[in-house]
Length: 224
Image (cartoon, rainbow, N blue to C red; front, top):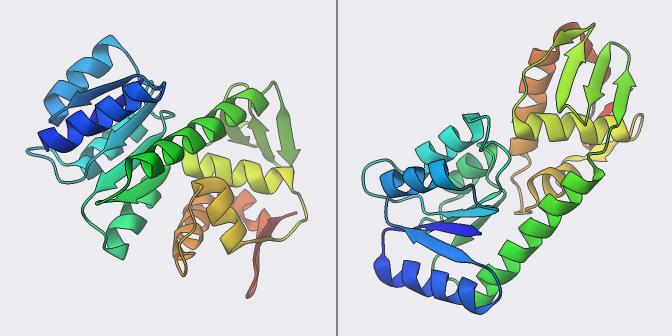
């Protein structure tokens, strides 16, 4: 099930029609209120979320989704007429999985939806009962928990995925561009600042253990 939150009825109806015509069940909502009412009844597999909505906008909705215990892992694709670089960075920093700017082709949209769903399925399949440990840092994939010296560390979804990626590649230097593609699933030139911001907050949350994350000047990061 794909939920489409879009105030423009023509676009909303076309997206839902295309979803249902291509083997993806879709349902549309014109605003935050009707969307949230639907969430209480059934959780979707993916959400298409417009930024410019009446009342509560898409950015605020995205924040709430990522903060909610039952909604934090639902993939979200931002769909909006805004094409400014700032909006892309803001949406991806808040945990959006992809970003599509209007006008867009319906088949392109369907392709992006399927790609995000494939990545999500792959992540859930590989998140077996695996525990990664480096120094005082322990990452439990099955429980989706991180601890340092046995004390729990509260991370956002992207911070968790970033830490896991580095721990899986202990000692290997990962470039900023590589991390941007692998963790955010999206590549747009020059926006590696997103990675730097998340590394900084991740180090802070890990406390003294954050020193294990090394900056390789001009290249990227590694944990060792």
